[in-house]
Each structure stands twice: as C-alpha cells, then as structure tokens.
Length: 476
Image (cartoon, rainbow, N blue to C red):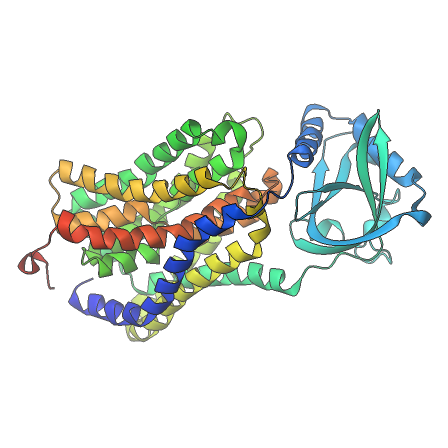
C-alpha cells in the first residue's frame, strides 16, 4: 500500500488515461444529445404489463389469463400479417390450479420500442419442451434475453378491451452481440475482482486500526448517507411515484461498493491511495450484507417492486466475494506471480469497466427515446447524485478534522461506485422484478459514465479547495 504500489498503479493508469478521457467526453456529451430524440412510446403498454402483473399477484386463478390465451388460439392466423422485430419475452405467472394451466400463465412479447403483444401459446405444454419440433421449443429458457422475433400479428378484444396478439413463425433467436455482452459482463466482473484480490493482503485490512476515522467515516458515507440521499432525491424529484424502477436504480447504485475507478481518480487527485484501496476493499466485503439489505429496506413499501434478495446475495457472492478471496489466496501463496499479474488485471479492470459501460448504454440506446422518463431531470439527478456524494464526503471529513490528503480519497470513494457490479445485478434481476423499461440498468450505466466526468471535475477543484503540501503526503 506504500510508495511501490502507488508507483505501479500510477504508471499503469497513465497509459490508460486516453481511454478514460474519451469516456469522459462521451459522458459529458450524451446527456445533451439523447434528450433531443423523440419519445418512443406512451405508457399504455407499461400499464398493460402492470395490469397483468397485478392480476397474477391478486388472483390465484386468473380468468383473464385464460380468456387471453383462448382468444389468441381462436384468431384466424392464416391471413394475419407478418412482422419481424427485436425485443424481449416476458412471462407472467400466477399460482393457480395446475389442472387449468391457461389460468396460470400469459406470455408477452415486448418490442424494444415498448409495444406489447400477447403471445399465442400451444394448448399442449409438450410443444414448448426443448426437443419439440415447433417454434415454441425451449421458449421458457429464452426468458430475459434480447431476441429477434418473426411473428404473425392480429388484433382482438377481451371483455371489450383491445389487445394485440402474435403467433411465432420461427423460433426466437438471441443476437450474438447480446449473448456476448451478457457473458462478457459476468466474466469481466469476475476477473476484475480476482485482480483486486491480487493486490490485497490481510494486512491491508488492518488499516482500520491506523486510520480508523477515515475508514469508519468512509463506510458510513457509502452505506449510510448515500442511499439516504438517493431516497430523498427520488422522492423530491417524483421518481418514487412516477418511475419506481429509476428510484430502485438510484438506491442500487448507492448501495454498491466502490471500485477501481475511485482508486484511479484518487491517484490522479493526489489523495491517500492506500486509504482509497482499503475503503474499496472493506465496502466490497460489506456489500454482501448491505447491498441487499439497503435495497430491501428502501424499496420495501413500493407496491410494484419486489426485490429478489436471494438473487442479489448470490450475485455478489459469486461475482465479488469468491473472486476476491481467490485473488487474495493467490497473493498469499504465490506473491511473485500476483505482483507480476497485477498490471494485467488492473488494466483489464479499467478498460473492461469503460467498455462494458459504453456497450451497455449503446446497446440500450433505444430506451433514451423516452424523453419523459429519461429527460433533463433524470440526467441532472444522476450527475447530482455522484457530485453531491463527493461534496458531502468533503464536508463530513472536515467536520471531524480529517486532513485534506485523506479527505480527497474519502470524497471520491463516496461519490464513485462499482457501476459494473450495479449493471450486472440490474441485468440479472430486471426480468424477475418486472422492470419493463430496464430502468435499473440504464440508471446504473449512466451513473457509470457520468461519474467519470464528475470525478475529473473534482480532481481540478481539489487543488484550490483541499490543498495538499508535498511534504505532508506520506511517501512510504
């Protein structure tokens, strides 16, 4: 954690600064470009999705589901028009009589624009088995992926209300790039955490005894103050009532630990790099408890939101705690190998994070056409969230007498987060939660981009606001 590690880290990040600079430009430019696009769709399709979800939750034996499925099969599909589009499969289930399967489940197809169709499903469940010779074979396993659909489309009505119905012509196919992105984001996050573990020893965690105020305040700000700030902003700006999954996304990104970005920014800010790395390490370990706990706590009373706590815990355990432990174990047994491998994993961490954030945002660029949801208020709130985190990190640090050198690190650790982890969790739980517009993923991805811009601005402002004398900076 001393001079040697700081120099190695500095040499590495200096080479990667051009990539960071490009992301900063993109992050600063994107909020001004995206709101100029036209809105994708009204809320009628989301209202339909909520209606069916509430039907599933409120009735164990949904008559509406049976009527929708029966109506879909009764349509004269021979003369229906053909359509091809990209979108997602959504499956809404209710607990009901196993002898009446049509009352238990309804299948939906959602275009990327948000338009929703009721999917006709075969009356015989065997037609959906993986080895069935029909377009519906293995359909349930494709839930949650972006898919290419080729369908027949027709209109119909149930109980006097209009619905749009479709029937599959060909089996849905997941685009190769979407499949690759999902695999990459999981693998990259795993190996980045292994890389973090390679830089750590148990002695690094002993820093809490030598710098207790910085560590304790940093963790209180990360897991105490920031989610509280996100909740307050979410209520004041109306996201809680209007767009609950943006609200959940704000809680998620503030309940996530720090990552390599805060360490990178702390180095360039000439802050306490050892403290920054220790805070990242501590918050990463604590996230196994605090991330699901805070999500469940702040989203407990939201009627349309049900946090899959078990999935969140499993994700953090598999993609964070286990690889971190693997890395630390390798460092303990083969320290020379760990030292030689660290530059590679550090580079992988920084470059992969930037690439995944950009790829994630660009692959979901269509959602930003919804300017009512993702407008100026949204971009302002995301920028304010990371900026206010850094500002209050300074305020609280100075209130208890922490020096400027450590304050710079605490400020950046408070405002910058492991957005790749937030994006991964959002991606894995959005379908189970019914996040119709992928708002949690979008919020996490935009935060990941904008925090670079806010971090660079903070670095320039630290010089006049938090002056650090060269002789006061520890060299060992």
